[in-house]
Image (cartoon, rainbow, N blue to C red; front, top):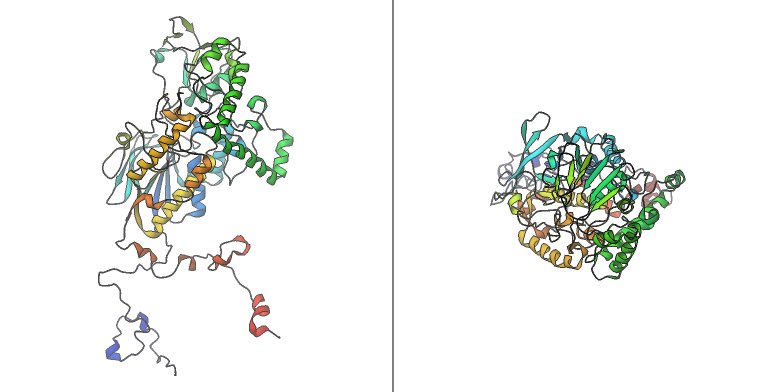
Length: 609
């Protein structure tokens, strides 16, 4: 059988819309694509794009702390066609480490494990203080010019409303410098504002009548001199204990209130800390060793992380680990309190285990309580006067400074209208209690994610690995929306309620639901414990990839497979290796430039030459 070649002049027949096969009696017209239909009988049309083409989307993030930093850095490396805008209410980036500068403010996680896996540095202390952590974050923002490219400082969101028809969030944003309000919109809205960002003063009669220096720990005046002054510290949470421990050494007198029992234990990874879990400064020899031995530095971080990941066991009521932690902590506390009968009886808990509140490194706190310059109250403060305060018996005490370490609004409700497509404001949706989807999403709120929302792993360990996992999860969803032309992802309410049902029952096994006051439970003994029902490894496993079956997904296309496009894959055109599935040369996913060396050695025609 012979092969008939096309006649001269017919090579462009595929692209010639005027060809009429019958009139021209052209036997190659169908073969050369002249009769390829533009649509089918329903009007469906092939999208002339390769599979993997990413449509442009916009993302708005609220807050410019550690979470947003990781998002921006990794988005530049991994995402395409994404326009990002960050609104930050403060004058600079850094989030909680910019805002919290009270004396003794330090991270409760060892420094070497409170850093991104992609940006390792040498730290000065085992538990780093706030300025060093802020400098680390700020340095990365500056090195990559991320503020200039993405962040609008001193801009505060005033409303966010989902428009179902347009498939976008619509925002009103106030410029805090000028007071003007502008509008913006984006397909995705990410809350990276953190959990502890709306500080509150205590409701004590006469508080603002005080004529001395009044400060909140989250808005501390760093330039104010404490030396020789009489200082009242209200609040015995993580900030309060660090402040008392630090100021006890310089203030002439400390007044402090501990209204309910608390476990004061060594911070995380105490095996590697100083004596009794104390913080310490790395020696030049230690820092040089870590710098010259990166593999040993990794091993050091892994061993500390190994200890952190095992602490979940002592959170479980009735476990041997819980018993050992309780006995160890009791002995340690009683010893540092010099076995003072009143303080031991009033402060050391009897009906809940360590871990009910997140441990905070505050070496010196217990010693400060029994120091000669300390007056410790275990009953509620009476009132604030112009010169100081009255105690529970009505006695007046004069002081120069009042520091309110009284925490934050931990209700989870936003400070502005956040409205879904049905017109429901999140402040109303969460008016009585909170329901989230795996901590990262909110049921009935489309295309909205949160870095550590309710029922997140708040109770133990470093946030940095979690931030990296949340970011990867968000990228997965955004990329799927881009590639498959998906309008919205909405966590299903029924499945979110099932997740919460499981969580609430499981959490009864843990110290987190015991009768202590904790910001996990909105500062209440019996508040809703919106914490993840499992270990950090359990959480990281669950969020390895999105469970798309848990979402209601709305598509822009009537045919869900329209994303398959013109039959080609984007990889075939964008410079990536088109044989990547065989392995990558030198670890790079780039199309190699092949030479002729192998052909001269291995081609059949070269044999015997």
